[in-house]
Length: 242
Ligand code: 1GP
Image (tube, rainbow, N blue to C red):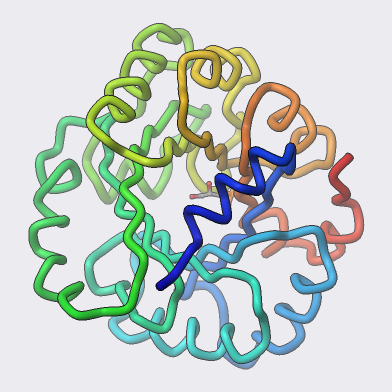
């Protein structure tokens, strides 16, 4: 029995802030795993997320298998598509793109994944996923053919996140998009967090220790960082959670 969600709740209840390192199988060579994961292990990272918008079949499976060899951190799938599901991971964020109105990403992909999930020892965590505008078009927007929510539309963002919770989702993920120009604002994070009774994940465009700390101080329970580490692994050295 996997306990990834329970462990997240326990950590948050004890006042801990969580940090997920995002690895995109499309951009990351399996050969780089030993060195990179050694750095992740030595950092303050608490989780490893694996996923991307356009990933070749089997790439996720091979990558997760390699990552698991080198770490005891929980490896969580953050899939862009059904093909990225693999039992080698510990958990799956079962993402429903509730900021958009494309039925494929609200429920369609989920139905398609059920036969694949059958019998797998993979913890499935229902997650409400909200894409927020960040200053440029992102891969999520292109692939899902949905518009991000406007940053100024704070009440609508709050109501959407809350609707996700009321539908029974266990996590809410505020996404600015990979490589976002503007990360999710502190005002949005605080407004959403105030209304939520479930953990809040924030990601997209966080490139400095200050931005990371601001997200935490605003109410993020977990922050996801991908691009900053892809571009400069020394970012690990700058990140410390106070
Ligand atoms: C993307 O939120 C994640 O889905 C992380 O974004 O790559 O900009 O860190 P970055």
